[in-house]
Amino acid sequence: NGLVEVIRGDDNLSFMASLLNATDLQATLRGDGPYTVFAPQNDAFGNLSPEVFTGILIDENERTRVLSNHVVNGSYTAAELLNMTEGGNTTSLTTLAGVNLTVSVNGSVLMIDNATIGGPEVNASNGVVHVIDKVLVPPANVTPVETVAPVENVTSTVNQTQTVNPVVNMTELPVGAI
Image (cartoon, rainbow, N blue to C red; front, side, top):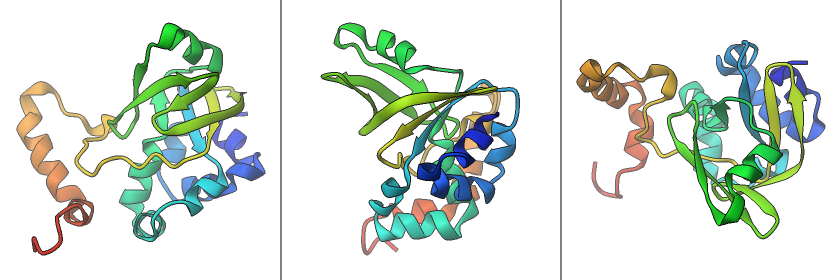
């Protein structure tokens, strides 16, 4: 089974599976990969602020951006992640949303940013799925990896990023700024 089928097959990931169905990201995760998916368990979505939760539900761009922040290129098992953090080191993995997530160990607990990686990973034909206990919401001003332009087009990429999803950028403004 591929990554999408693995996620759909876990009752504890049913909300992630439903959100994935409503994005183009599922086509990416059906590709050859390999990808590592840090999939938030159902309870994690209930811990989001109402504003973030509503944004994920009603805005396809925001939904894709948040879900893409849970996927990295490459297949990383728990053992490989533990090796990367041996001796108290941390390592960064860049998500498809363009955000660097920090992998660390807290005692014997493997962490990705502020989320705990729980249970054994599930291997798929095109990668690996780790269940995590939090939703990793990316900052609003990051350019997704899939749309990163060559160096000579940096200016147009910045302008494009500012106009693609202005709602997200506006929500980050201080009260009274508009």
